[in-house]
Image (cartoon, rainbow, N blue to C red):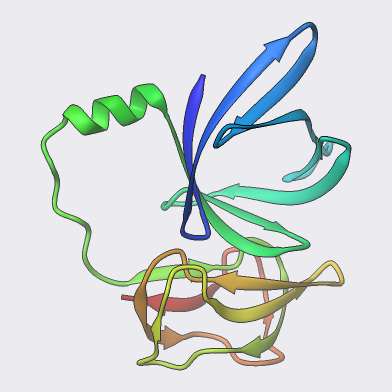
Length: 168
């Protein structure tokens, strides 16, 4: 099946293929051998992609999926080809307006805040650094926006789901 993904402002076309007991992922024409496994009793996954191992946490959010790993924290939007075709046939709806609240996808400590209220940010821009599980994760903007409020400061301990930054 074909999927369309948006990660950190970049768009990708993905196809997942199963052949001879192996799983292959084709991303924008590049083919990778893949093995995805869930870590038992957690929201973490391991992905073996052409022999390289990646570990990440994944949580569903209102906007898509929040993905956090060694490379930082990202908003990922994914839709399959059937959903995209149905959306394209549906009448256009007005884009939602109002603030968008970025929440922590895991407990941690805010190490650094990189923006202030009133700052214009672009998709993929780092907003703050959240330390979790001894890793420094960048919380990034999923879209171009203006910072309406920063709800945390350096040294703030946050729980999963805690409000971090409000964008409009």
